[in-house]
Length: 401
Image 1: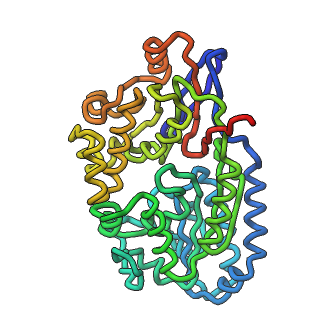
Image 2 (image 1 turned 135 degrees about the vertical axis):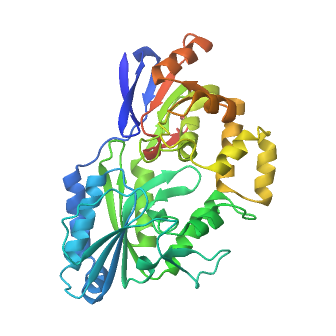
Image 3 (image 1 turned 90 degrees about the vertical axis):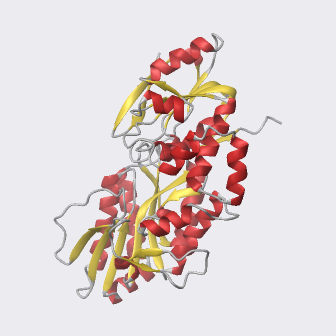
């Protein structure tokens, strides 16, 4: 038996697969150590003339910390930036933590403030120069800074192209009202348009620098980039496509996947964003087994309502063409997925909601779901495992010449 551990909330849970039934374990190989990443970041900071110049001139500095699977590394990156900026005694430094960012230590220099952004209560200002369909409202500490730097992880995303670093400013430090305006009741938009809009919002705030990392399946940094938000994202996306990609040589009858642990699996509406990764490795009419703790439940009222309607997927998709709703889009995707695949969910959501509202099959453990799936399929069903679907890009291998 081969035992594979899947991230689950803040812990891990195992799946055991007979070796002769296992096709592949899709994880990205580690290519570095935390010290390598920190050393590379230090070199990038020291050699970036623009950052060094702005750090000497700025009076108000805002470092925005976003989500990162390696919280310790994120803190170290912020400290490296701090050391550069504290050479300017006139600079007032604010570290603005977006929702989901790691908790920072309090033993920081006295001129440094730590502020956690709350979409519902933090002070925000409208971004009036944004030429788009909405008027974003962003954290006033961020908008008022002379030097703006964002720090976080870059991740592939099945719906939005990429996520993480590009989302730290918007929706990361936006008001709840502008987030809702961005996600719901839009005409003629797609998930890719949401991603573009987020980048346009960031660019409308002025010169923003970004320090980002790509993490492998073990949450070790395998690439670091620093520069303007556009340059940084371009470099990170190229590295992500190269370093996180795995080829699929054979599709499986059963795919067992972990969503990626906290915070990715805090809610079902977040977890659904990784489901397409598992489908890529799965045969049509195959079985998908998903480990996602969902400690905060389904996570969104609109997503729940769209699923609870029990409408045919094409009805939901027609509605989206007239009034795009991102969480409704995820509900329509799930309903379409369930037409062609059997999906088991291992979570803390009560079985009634898993099965009656969201249409999946509930299981207490991954191994229980796997045994049930094997009994319903042919005896020689083949299995693939994806430990962390949020940090791997799966591609169908090109046929041999």
